[in-house]
Length: 206
Image (cartoon, rainbow, N blue to C red; front, top):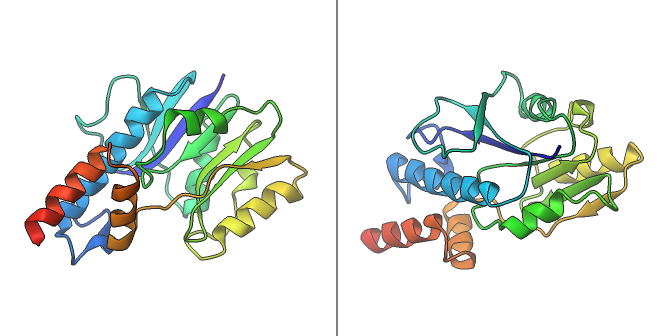
């Protein structure tokens, strides 16, 4: 019973993608976050899985499509919140964030194939990770990992191998955090809502 987990913040101006300002206004940054989240959830819906769960910080809105289960995030550091998300799964699970609208169903399906792996690790080019898949989700594998630092991914992957897991890697992707990130991701995934909105906003601000 495979589970796709998406951990995300509600796209509220001033609370999400604050590093996109001042190139974009707080509302524009929130709109880009919404587009990224919508792209992500659409890809999740197109990926075979028994459950699709949005683990949300904030209030759900009409932007959540049918077929997505919504669970509120717990309090605590990011390691605690990620661990709690994995605790929701009753079988193999793949966890992703809302910052990689360029993902595809094929990429997520790969991360849910545990035929020859105990874990999948998706590195981000900022030193973190955009995806983590566990054949047997154990929240303890995340607790205590330092989050949002340049060596987060290194520590997390080492935690998996230290536990004796056979780890395979997904392709490295760029998380959307800064305006430069947003430009790169929009160029790499022109078919997305995110890219269309980014193009429109940049045309207006030129």
